[in-house]
Amino acid sequence: MTRLGAEWIAAIALSIQAVIFLLQAGFLCWQATILRRHATTLEKHTEIADVQAETAKLIGQALDQQGKVLTDQTTIMGGQFSFQQKLATQAERTNVRNLIVAVHGRLVILDSKLSRATFAHTAEFRQDVDRHFDALAGAVYGCQKQVSVSIHLTEPQKKYFLAYCDSLASLHATGNNNQDFDQVRSLKDKYEDDSFSRMIESLGDM
Image (cartoon, rainbow, N blue to C red; front, side):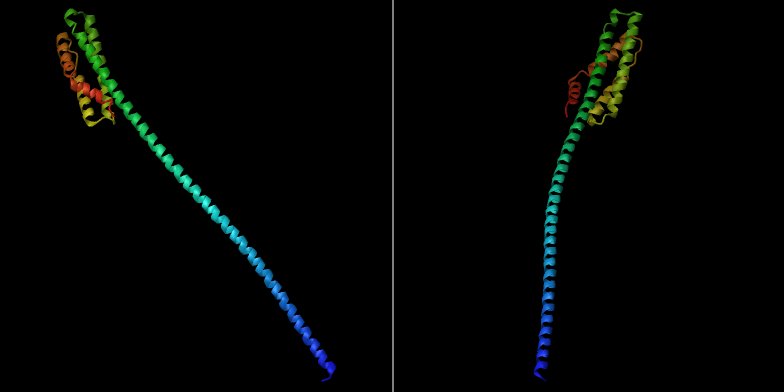
């Protein structure tokens, strides 16, 4: 092999090595670019993960706050229901008490009217007595009906006042002033004792 041939071979070999070096350099550059892109992607993913974590934290705080609000609302609604129930109970018991007092008032008026029967025997007087009997019967019926349907009375209260209404419902005008006076006075005296007063007062207790 001549010297010129050897130089050509060496030159070709160097050229090949240069090409390989350039290819390796290009591959390294390509790898560096890929790695940079991967790093950027990882950084973005990290940022997204941080944002998601912060979002999850805020959602958790919002849920906790909402739970507290719901608990407070439940407590308030429970208090309002209890208060409204108490008002309904008191209103019903007060209504019963007013009806009982009104009925007893009519009984007292009728008794007072009949107590003057000895001095008045006119037809007009008798008609007036009959009107008082009718008014008492109407008041007793309304009271009896209310006591029967009341749900906020105790069993002893309901039993006592129903018995009271039944007793007054048994009163009927006989047309005889003296007989009417005797039956009215008997019931009036029966329900003007301390037990009657205590039962009336108990309707104001809660």
